Image 1: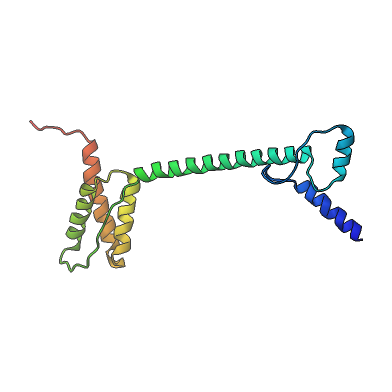
Image 2: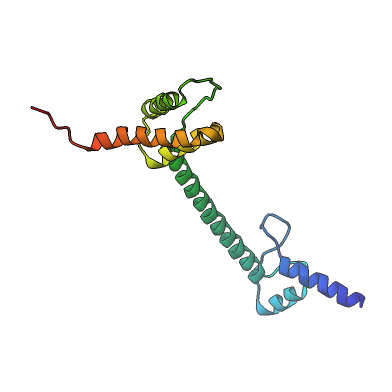
Length: 165
């Protein structure tokens, strides 16, 4: 039993081999009789196990390089996407108003003009902001005013101007 444990440990060491050629392992090329003798020696890895370890190390390096390239590509795409994203700073304040419809109109017009919002995605974000930041009782007014402002801004820009004579 002791012999089988020693044989298993020796086999494990032989398969493990040396991960680098910097240790005290000997690498020698010898005749077939010496090779048979050295194969009995479990202290030193064989040439094939060293070759296997070197090939495995190279494959691992290639896999790491490929993963790093993929990660770099993802970072680059994310940076490009972030450059295209607009960041709009909006400050909310509580305000008492006698004419909330007109106040919302002025505020929405100012936000669209100041931030040069033209994209439908950005307009939708702005509308969601107004709806979420104001009381539920004003949602209908906000939707109506937002529709009117967008219609005036964007449809009037696309229609040709006719001069009356």
